[in-house]
Length: 345
Image (cartoon, rainbow, N blue to C red; front, side, top):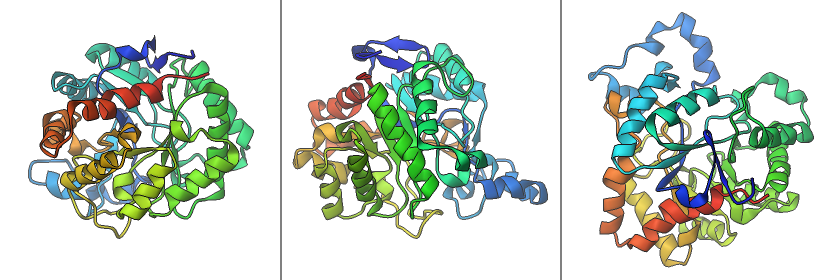
């Protein structure tokens, strides 16, 4: 498969990829295990999403289990048809172990919409993983990811095209380190890019890069996700970029300062663009990718949210206003995604 991009519909030439979002969820269930267990005794956790309740449910201060269940294929088709009409062509779907992956559903959605979709593989953070994973070895995790890339994932013949988003907590758990070590072995064997969900601590991206170097990871083909909810100072931001990894700003459209997972102040889209502008001016324009990490119903257009097309409707024009040239936009949306998604071995 070297030299090709593996989509859920088969291998394609890299040049066939158009503007690409590198981190989305189309069919998933990311409901935290604690909420899943509480549903039976707390029916208010799955109250209907209405025009009156939508904002508070999206804001996240009050738990709601229903908003994180996105398993409706017809709804996914409707949302991706809007995405395609608004200028999107391709996306990376990051629903992996622990998040209810549906490879055959992605095949159906891709066929019906014409959106090229690259599927991830591996496992999310420990809290979401199957307890049986505690007994598995590094080599077993590696073999699973290699098989997902070469033969098919999650009991299907639908092949993954990227490793990740490999989940890390802060502090990093022993099981998550084992999965990461397996991901590095899989990267070495397949030449696939590796995309990583860091824990919510500004020093964990550097810890992850040090681990990857020690284990023989391919740093220029490694993506650190969620930079825009993890690093808030230029010293750490520039130091991470200096390692040669790819920095992913993937929470565009998330405009709430409140973050229910950690005591941080989330940036808005303008702040994200300014961070990227500083990186481009410093010479890191070929190390940036963007996305929205949509994983809740309230961020879909059908429920009053911004939808998958937000980057093309709103962010690209905003970036032009902030001084991004067409060549810089092409690097972020087309050229770097093509490089990363082209298998090397």
